[in-house]
Length: 432
Image 1 (cartoon, rainbow, N blue to C red):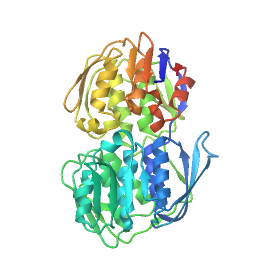
Image 2: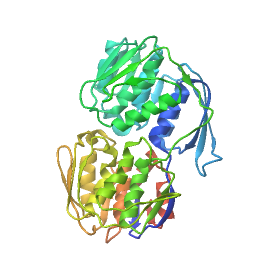
Image 3: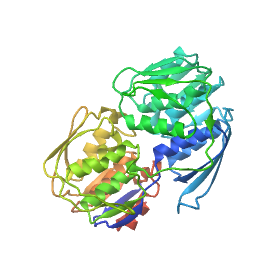
Image 4: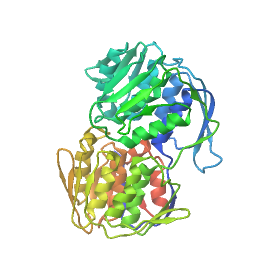
């Protein structure tokens, strides 16, 4: 198996933030549901985004890809749709993208045609049973393979009341929010328990509102009233904002190295992962707001307590910062990380420990005892892009080189990661 070795060296310089993968998914689906032509600019063709493009093409949307004239090295999508679903391919492969699968499954039920949803890697085993019970109540036949993909759907959704838990994945709520406004009557979504990852719901609400859809909700975001018979409106030009989730890795790298300026981030963004800014401040970092970006520079960090219920994707990189902080950091309410691309509580603990960290795995979190530096050594990316990028960040504080197998997993969300890492002074060697 190919591996990549990082020779520890300080990073310094400026990078442009990646476009938000989460907002790109949402914009592509909204454009696919809009009658007319939409232009979506500032796109990186990660594996996950390619999966969503392939999914909307299977549902009758035309997508053309060109070089962006406004964002160097990025793509621009021109999306043409009749505003309706017309099945071109009844087998939709979502690759390893949970967002694609959970967003697109209810969208396919705008028509009665049979469609099979499949994927690969850990996605095949990730939970979809929320839809299984909901769809059965609303006229859709749902067939899976012993609870796993492939999942075959037949029949169209009916408007009505949709009750579902909020502590499994916000993606189920988002999938319904995309779809229910297009049904022939009003619908209501009722969250039956604690809603986790609320920022992602807010991002979906913003996206559908940008494309002309109206949804009402209570203050707690537990009840959503959705008028039917609505139409999405094509956007002549829509720019995807910078991605706080991906930037978080370089926020931490700047805080433990020689300073990194990150351009293109919106401090007023609805993205929940912009919380990395406040978390690092609480840990003792002192990011500087500049005219052209945010500068993160070497800081003395200290341990804190982190509630990860609304920011699960930040846990691996927070764990890196915590491993180099003075004192102990406790991360709680993170049990849902066990059903990501890897069991991220287990893999964060095991792989960071393999290069010298001191992390104790708990049922729903981690306890991390900080140290001035890590040792280095060998680690496995576990097929998980966030684990790989966290190991790269941790390598900056290692005394010996770090060798990562499965380093290619970054293609899922950030295919240019290693190039950006090298641009800032990172030293890497690839072994075939």
